[in-house]
Every structure is written in C-alpha cells, then in structure tokens.
Length: 116
Image (tube, rainbow, N blue to C red; front, side, top):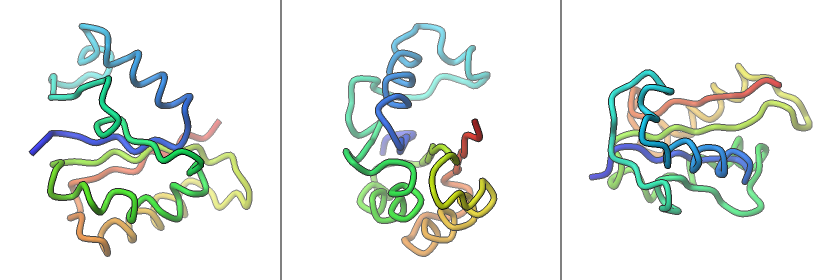
C-alpha cells in the first residue's frame, strides 16, 4: 500500500507539487517526516483533466474510490474561488461526507481548501 495520494484540482497545483517533491528537502518545507511519493507518478499526484475545483468538489469521492485500498491517506486540494462560491467550510464538509460515504475512513483523508 502506498502512503499518500494527492487529488489536485488543476495543473498549477500539480506542477507546484511535482516541483516541491522533486526537491531533496521537501519534508523540511512541509514540516513532516519523509513519506513515499513519486513526483513523476500520475497516481501519487492525481488530477482528472477537465475536473477543476467544482468537479473536485462534486466528484473527489468518486475519483478516489478506486484508490482507497491502494493508499493509506488522501489529500484533496482545491481552490474556493469558483462559482457558485460555496465557501471553504461547505467544500470541506461536502467532500468529507462524500469520502466517508465512499468508504474512506475519517482520519485517512484531509480536504485543503485554498482561499485566495
């Protein structure tokens, strides 16, 4: 089982995280221990083309369902700046409910909402 899958809403997030994880000192930048991640992998850094912030909001649980037995943890990252502007709290709650309903246990995932 792999450590963490990052579900990203756009190619800017994907490019940024790939660059971060290509560094030898990324664990210090994140303030955590090193974990297994392949920055060149399309699974570890997962993005569905055309599925931007609104799509991640509505479909993260479906998109990640096939990975729940392949990864210990999931990090879902999206931006709150899209129509209809539901707000960070609603985005976190809705995605969390979907993740739990699709079989991800609480504590195995986190939803990060960027508020520009």
